[in-house]
Length: 219
Image (cartoon, rainbow, N blue to C red; front, top):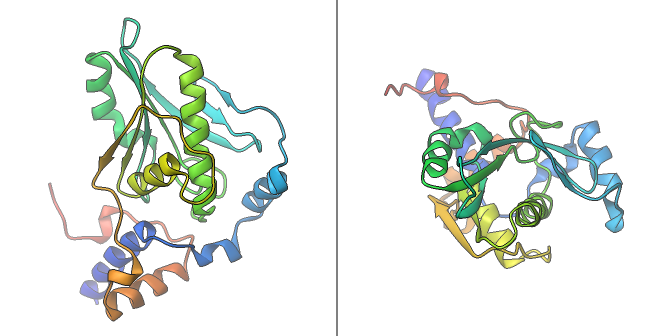
């Protein structure tokens, strides 16, 4: 039985990194439905804003923010996107080192993750790609004249690619370069039947929260 839950947890984590639209969109939390309705048909609540502890998206959604800044004027800025079932503080070690080397790092909790409203519910690939482009634009406004890079880890890597290319028809993130850390590029078409079955099963429980406690892994 323990082995079953271990395999299930692993497949669940992979599910969040799989490409393609998610059936979670049919079962969003009320607060997330409200946010998306406000942004429907291009409607804007207010201009997006970059605050010390959060990003306010154009539809009013709040994305908690972590910033690591150098003591002097930064040589470049990095917008960092975390992976599935994670949040902005995943970049604490890297952010501290980058700041020491003169880079300003801005990492935020992506919608449906971390400390955001509607945590556990997938907001749609287009929405989180738009958020990434917005974050880049805000950081570029704050730091004119220096390069701005978009860095994504795992699921964040997939979002980085979508945002930088505008592949879903969303505005392209105006970046000087991208940094991909183990990007999630494993789609259903490359999975076997058992992996696809695990993916389907995991998607039936969008509010499921995973942690390392479910896996027999020690460091």
